Image 1 (cartoon, rainbow, N blue to C red):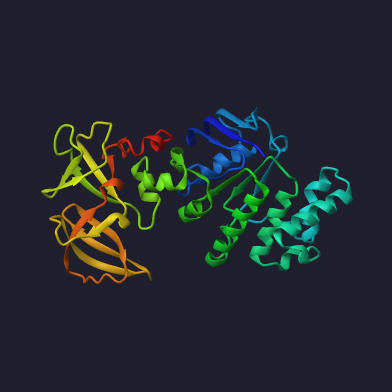
Image 2: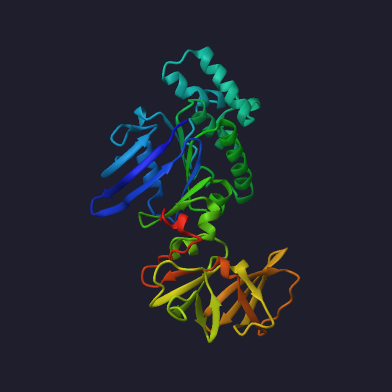
Length: 365
């Protein structure tokens, strides 16, 4: 497999810039997620890796070789599309073997590879069946088999599970990650689903409006978002935001919310002007002694947990609580925040202020 390196890659379509100076590295053997909303530039970035689009500027390296201006046929990669793109007039085995035979591989060797891939994917019993009558999951396995059988340097996947229903999509995500681990493959996977990205990825790039907002490990991105956009996009419910004005005093590590002092991680950058405090729902706790109060608006039961929506002096927030904690709409409760997990954002730029805890993560942003 191979390392893929993207250096200051930009893509313009006329006057529209789809990708703006993206830089990141996919290490050999990683399952790497390109995550973001529709139109953020993630698929365009993937297509430039594949050679289906040429970058306007910047460089793309695969296994140390610059390939930015080379056609797809010279990059030794396999691309898996969301729509399965199978040949309807061929059976499963012929669909999988097609790329090998089209490159002139002898039929006995192609047959051996097809059998091996079918064993890995668990589709040995359907090799002679037409693809038209297969379920969505089996058709996706065939599409994966056609990519795997070539033994490329890297696999590039554009929302390959997007056409499946939710329950089977989760099952296929587990299978796909297990397949990746068995093959020790380098895989770049595009998705707009943050849960899918967190579940499957070793590393995640979060994109928005053609810009790489942050990249890193899933837990790092969740715990220490580099921008307010990342904090809103990652997590369900997303991070809560409470606006305030500066720190309590020079050199202070605390802020004031409605006459209540809240400690925050030590910011190494100046925390002045209009700021926003970010706190995850699970890091909010009810406290009888806290002076910071909120009024319960609604509760949403989720089995082992519940989401409690509250109105506070700084706006509406959501807290994740154990389901056995009883609260009623209209009830006023004291609120405490886990100070070790708080993030402070600049209101104007949306950028997180650097602290000792997230210094290593935010340098990627």
